[in-house]
Image 1 (cartoon, helix red, strand yellow):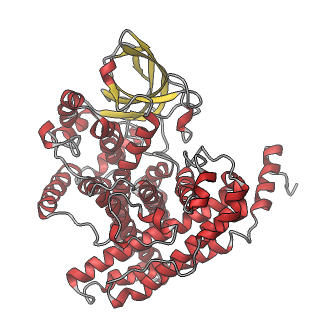
Image 2: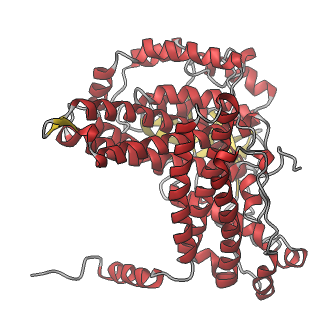
Length: 580
């Protein structure tokens, strides 16, 4: 039996080990937490339920009224994760995610405003702050007197966070901060900024450190409100720092470990974005089912047509499985697990892509109405598009997911460890040269039959368990094959790493869904859980096809042809073939 707090389910899975104890039983909220969430849901219904026309108008205006922000403060929406001793609600990750899910059912701009504060803006203080820092700032953050923002992204340093140019230089016992940050959510009215800057030398361009910066410090200025495609009512601005003197006691965490802190903040906060995505899907299912029942063509409601049923059925599968994954990650964090970065990244990728599919299909079901601004569909499509970009693009997160697995695979055998040491320290940027010795011996790590088993699950879902176990073997083989095929060139083989990541995503979602369905069977019996078992069956069949295709295309693909066409287009900077 593994130590659940120090074991990553997915990193183990890539080496052929099914650490069932990590995901079973499915995490559940306590009775007290459920009661509190019911109260929060009721309060949010009173605050947001009648605001549909307001949300539409604020989107058109590109502004969220200050008076409404004050109402959010009064409802305690900025104190969700702040400990009770500092005036907050003290919600854990599962309860926080569930709260963002409720907000996401009403409006994405509101959810992002709240989430940017708690998920990332002040989470560094929660994770790394000293007792003095927490006592000084948390009561104001809980009340909303101070609203927080996360300042990492810069011009030229988005996904490549290690390339930031903002600097902090020691002076008079403190630091002098210079630089600019881009696309900062809540930037227009935030008073508390978690800022990342380069300090000292070493590690390339210099080590990164996190700082607490407040708006009242001389030299802090805010750029204009950005005119965005979606989330238009939320505040997005640049934040500039011109010779800002930051006291020494405002260093957040350890000096020089800012990059690690930034990644931990983003990982810890991913359940907020995931919860908002699940809430958005539930809202879309409500809209689509009502629309399909009410709209008639050829004398009958469109809900009677197979192609509409297919769309709604898939939306239900996507929502249920996303909720399983997001809840699982929140539960892992609440239980004190230390190794959840890969699982958190998967939850973000999967939930945001499921929401995008659901929004597109809901608009399609609405037909021409869906394209009109009078209806909510086009706004939801615009609002959810950013989810696949911010807090780590889904492309970068796929690389992180797969390359972290490559690290574990390559270092599994003792004879590999010495030759691979240091190669994979940074799973996104640090891939250097893999030795020929390592490449030749990586294949040794697959010992046929050395695959874990899931035990104790209900016979009604055993066929899906069997598929999971078989596809786990495929995953281990895929990781092995990619390493042996590409060796030291793995960092440049993004097609291969993407396929491995997609296999990992499908398997983690399948495992979380198995856990959730088993919990329902345990609580309600097979008959009452029959619909959930059907969801599991549908997802497993779809995932099995995708995994098989991704595994096959590791060796048989058109990757080089596609890249050659792209290179040709880059050279021409146009489409070469025209009919006139």
